Image (cartoon, rainbow, N blue to C red; front, side, top):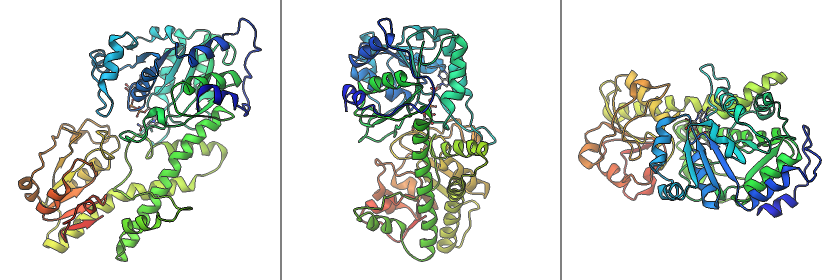
Length: 468
Ligand SMILES: NC(=O)c1ccc[n+]([C@@H]2O[C@H](COP(=O)([O-])OP(=O)(O)OC[C@H]3O[C@@H](n4cnc5c(N)ncnc54)[C@H](O)[C@@H]3O)[C@@H](O)[C@H]2O)c1
């Protein structure tokens, strides 16, 4: 749905907060709306990671001038050379825009002065005590503060609990003595990026928008309406924040459900993947979720606990989230126990000195992202019991430094050929990258433990393959 259409169907009213200024000749709102719709606006994106960079790409594709701001100097230096660290993004789009002076990568927050809209896509991780770490969002708001000017639209895209934009970002920005809804405009629009998903690029995914007041909502709706397929305005900042966190909780809970069923069905001699394939032929009331070796990435293992933390303020608990977390968190240990079972029953040996080749380091297929990846956790668990692990991942030449597994950093991905595969006691498939030759794996491995049902893709998978 285009911008004009969506703005006209804005029947919802903001639940609370500023209602926006009375419109008069001097109101900047209409002029801004026009700049967004005509794509003549300059848009700044703060935080050029897995979310921010695809957003930049979508904005450039629609014809906007884009300022890309990050505190990571190396990243900005690379972008200035036309290099893009996310392999599935087309580098030429960025290079062309650089040449045409439509894309300005920078570390200087003063450049924000030029921007008609500022989109914030910085990380929202958990602290060591598994509580929300909003320091990146707060720091970003503080860096915007001295550069905030009248007539700018600020949109938070980072995932967080309902109340973040109003209670954390707004008070910081209002220290400027400018008022949200009057002098500047504040909105929340969650990113729904699915890295590596070639079917749905940023512009093909409908965008939820919530505003602090009616003008903020109209402006955010018009901006996204100019470059995404559809906008979905909701009545408040909090509703928009709740949509995103609900989507991620929905995934976490359903993945936990199939993980739990997988373990039970395995004992009963029933194949969970076969059950799901058959169940999903029901044309209504069933949605397929797939089991795996544990959650990974920046979203599903983390975001639900933002709401759990917030719920305590209301004296309520989020038992589904906690239970799902418990089940999903035990999956790496379950996979290790399956490797032990297979080694024991097939060779009479245990893990000690067993050589294990882990296929897949990224947390999901066809991308390089290793954040929270269960592969790293499993390598540590296996090695703690005396196993000797190597890994192969076509997207990850060497294990990156992570907070949880610093000892694994720098380990290089081994080449994958028949000779290499046959030299290991067990090949453990953790990520089902499409480019892996699974036939080569099953033909050469002594034992394959497959956590993704990847070997089902090839004819010829034999009795050496066990699912986990
Ligand atoms: N990765 C996903 O699939 C995904 C999907 C939907 C939503 N999200 C959410 O989007 C947000 C961003 O996630 P991401 O995966 O893109 O993170 P990321 O770590 O890939 O990128 C974040 C970027 O922000 C930069 N940054 C940090 N602090 C900054 C600051 N003060 N000023 C400027 N730049 C700063 C970092 O240098 C980094 O380049 C998170 O809230 C996440 O939950 C992520």
